[in-house]
Image 1 (cartoon, one colour):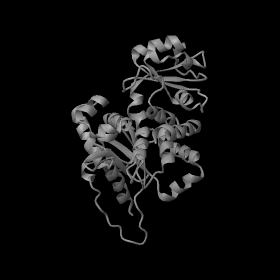
Image 2 (tube, rainbow, N blue to C red):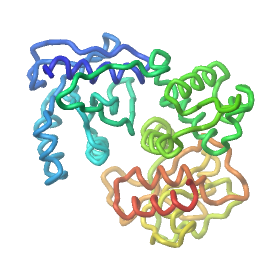
Image 3 (cartoon, rainbow, N blue to C red):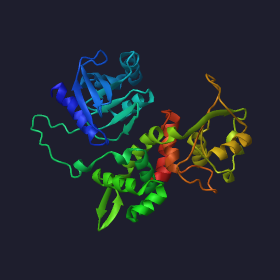
Length: 351
């Protein structure tokens, strides 16, 4: 397939899941190895760095070396408005790229864009079918024209969280979903239509059912830290007490997540770094009880504690954050110990 057709396939797949215009344009650009750029809404231009199939095949031999070489080729240039494009980027590589701040897109519709006011994380899309030696017959997927990407933007993630936490909400009024998720009624309606278009909400015997739950959880867990959690960051702290979390009580209006929560839920992980959800008022109580102090610029403590504001209502009798939140937080730092703990938590609480 000609390069321009492959690039158009990437942008067309992206455009189906985002609420803004995405096109590929030819231009002479030193930051692109193919002289093409991705243009979003005519106000953001990202030079495309294309990787062919043979280069991506080499990734399996040394993923870390590949990412390092990619950083040298892409991120060390003076112009950082770049995006990696390929026919298909495997999940492990996609995770590595996101962790290293490298933007990407592929023809399956997977994408990570974090430039200016554009924040996109799309994961879990399968590669296009390859029919060797035969003619590819393109069939229209029902609902393609209605896909807007709103389900996987910040408000949509809050609605998905509510539906995953309480699947009965799928058959309750939109106002009920809005009240539960804290999202406006108009947005809930648009998000519901998008979930239907993506096949995650389907009508069975005149009732809506949440489908492809495992895939939906995977997409939600990948996007949550970037699009919701990190925007609610209250600060990074440490303590002179390595067991600081043992001083936290459920009546403080605080919930523990990440490694500490995994330790409490499964007694599997010895916690080091911490993730806590607390309101600004509750943070003051936490700092006093756990003897926390905010990190100084450039400080490298033995362990760190990140505090975020929750978007959900914290239950006064529950010290551990909801399992779906803990699962996402464990996966967010790309630590093999935490990934193993996340798999255990998923099997025990989320299946």
